Structures are given as structure tokens and as C-alpha cells.
Image 1 (spheres, chains in turn green, brown):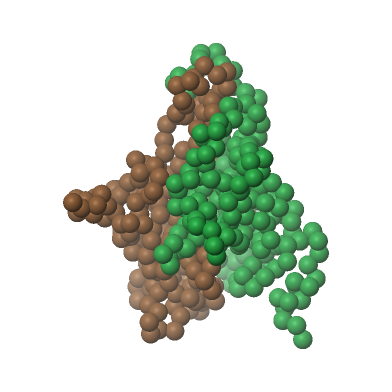
Image 2 (cartoon, chains in turn red, brown):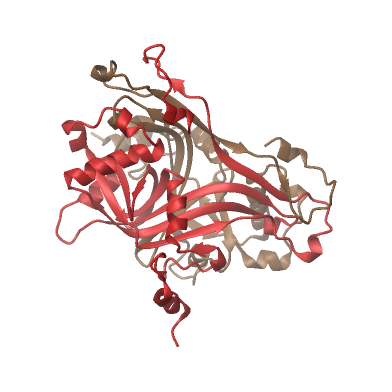
Length: 233
Length: 233
């Protein structure tokens, strides 16, 4: 008889990622999803991820921007930055950097009558894999555009593209979406039956990201209009 | 002549964390801070961290709640959850789980005329150390209260405390604030001189966390007032 994980892997349809031992959570499995559309939607709703890697035998977690293009994620940084140096480091036997890239949106605070059942509504995606340097010039250029457009859709076309010197100073890493899972909690608190009569308020406090009015740079020419892609944010 | 890192360590005043090799960034060192008050303020402004650890030789990054009490951080979870099991695992030679705990607040999108100088205003704290299980009943109870109050100040006193069964199902980990750094970017875009005449809008789009009106649970008794600690959020 196959183990539950093996069954899940066998049955994974094309529109879903194949679950693996490390993408099946030990807890709250009912919150896990491998659906490609669900994963893409969560990834596309954010632009800051937390990138985990191992340095000198210890875990390191750093915030960084990312962008998605199809089934690939891109991150970038200075060629001098640690994880980018590590991923691009001396060739043989070192084709990339094992990473875990996690994106989390917090959607609400869930207040139950009991302290124990307090929770948070969230959407998160965890990607396991090996980040490898992008060297193809066309893919690099597209990835850099995607990184700008992922944060502010439409902005890449309305800025000066990177020149040769800037391109040489920028490392781009690619992480394929293969070993991926989403985890989502929605809805109200779930209190124990015997707590329902307690006098404590219970419910959800929604949380959202709010953009303020754009603040022009000190050196921006007066009268420069705020572009439509910013007012639409 | 001492290396720069060693000098920094020697000169670290009591109100600052001592920089170490892994808390001195390779890039943008001017953005790094070891000031205790600055670190505490960033930690206290959030409640979701990204916890990195190593499992089967690979990095794992998971979002989780945290709270600060003085120079200690606490995270918690089911005793069945992976990182908590790993930290509490069979004693000898395994006193805890090496982790990296990172907290990030995104404060603004920084749009420069050049794609290259686009950036993000942020405040982040990275903590390296070993997470160890909290077994003292009083410290556990205080940590669980802190975890609730860190998200919604005042809520712990207005909910049913954990009972013996719930306490037994909950693992609490402690991470001491010793090897810690903050990194902060503020202000507008910094464009190259020769780009200042380009027609692209430049400036900052501020970002903030916005709380919506509290949504009562379906089973909440009608007329239960929204507590003051929620309207103050």
C-alpha cells in the first residue's frame, strides 16, 4: 500500500505541483494547496520574499525582491552580495545555491475566545529548490524588467534600462517552480463549544497593504505628472 | 592591525549588539545598525517573522508569529510541528535548533529614473542563534501571553488562558537576542547625475499596514461591544 504522500504525487494533475515530503506540512494539511493558479496568485500579489540559504553550516534568511515569469522565479542583487556570490561561485560541483523562498501575505488577525485558538489569516507560498545564475543576456534583461514590473506594473517601460556597467554589476538568480506549496487560512475563529458563552469579543480584524500618495523626489522637475500606473496601485 | 569587524566588536557600547562576521553585511553597510533600541523598535512593530532552519541538509523558511520580552524572542507552535519537534528533539548533543529569524517591514517603493536605482524603503532585523525549548511553566505562560499581546496589545487579559491540555500541546521556543542586526533604508531615490534630466517621474510611494473594521464571528452574541484595544489598533 503506497504511503499517502506517494498517492498524492501519483495523482497530481498537470495543473498542480507534485507534493513531496518537504512540501507536505506536518500540521494543518487541510490548509495546504499545490494548485498552480493558487500558487501563482499568491506569488503575484507580493514582491518581497524571504530567501533562506545555508552559509557556513547555519541558516540565513534575507528579505529580497522577486518576480515570477511563468514557472520561474527571479531574484537579483549586487554581484558582491553573499547569496548571489554563493550561487555563482566557482563552477565544478557547485551548480547553484540550495534555497527556500517564502512569500507571506497577512490578511487578518483572528481573535478567538480562548488564547489557544487565536490565529492569523494568511496566504503563503514556500518554494524549495536550487537558485542558479542567469547568464543568457536576453533572459537577464527580461528578468530585470520583470523585477521592476512585478513591484509597479508598467514601470519598466517608463525608466532608463540598465546600461552595460549596471548589468555587469547585477547578478540574477533563477529558481524553477517545481517543489512548491501554498498554505492559506481564511475565515473566522474556531472556538471550542464550551467557550462560546464567554464574554470575550471574537472575530477577525482585516489587514491590507495601503499605498499612500506618491511623494515626488526632491530633484524632480516641478509639474512632472504622477503616472497612471502609480495612481492605479 | 585589527580587521574592521574586530574593531567594531571591541567598540560596541552596551546599548548595541556586538557585530559579528555574519551580522556585518557585505553590501550597503551604511544601512546596518546594531543599536538595541532600533532593533527592539523594528521587532515590536511586527508580529510575523520568517524563521529559517536546516532540515535534511536543506534550508527551510516558514512564517510564524513571534514576541519579544526584553532580550528574548519567543515563537510557538504545535508540539507536532517540525521546527518545534527538531528544537526539542532527543537531548544529548542537541540542545536546540540553529535558526535565523528575520522580520521585515516594507515602508515604500522607491522609483528612480533608472531601473538600476529602483529600491524599496524597509526596516528589517535578522537574528542568528539557537532556538531552545522553554520548559519553565512561568516562562511558558508569560511567553504565550506575550505572543497574544504582541499581535493585539491588551488581548491576553481578555481571553481564556490556555488550559493544561492546550499547554501540553504547545511548544514554546526561545531565541536570545545576541547576534542581531537591523538594516534600514529610508528616503528618496538616488539617481545618477546624468539621469536627472530624464522625463520619468521619480519619488517614493509610501506603504503602510491598514487595519479594517473588526468583523464579528458568526457565533458572537449580538451587541458584544468591540473592545477598545481593537479600535486603537
